Length: 171
Image (cartoon, rainbow, N blue to C red; front, side, top):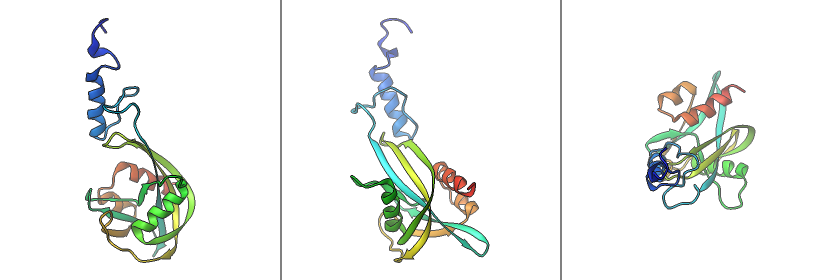
């Protein structure tokens, strides 16, 4: 680095802009570089559940279709203010699937930078069904399915959700 070359300074606009471009593309921002318009990334807490059952000798779990992203995902969502991560996970699963569940083992958390530059951490739990209020399609989720591990991968699940499924099957 040449002394006085502002483009190589850690706080230069060009490096910060590059970090912002990476974050918007879903890649992690450069460590220690401020995002444009922000001093620090926003921290987002979320919770979710891998709701499972044994059916005809096959272990299945529920997935949700999100029309906004046209993808299949494990049910999850953002925490409300002053809501515990456990309560968030149970509420989000109920809202997205109609299933009232009981918490089982905690699974590994997933942390990533969202396309909006937010630092997001999702805590996951294995869950079993305690009751079923019935699925109601909506804007966020328009379909649910019970699938096995291979079907989930075939649906094009994202790698972070697949890592949660793999951790569950390793229990």
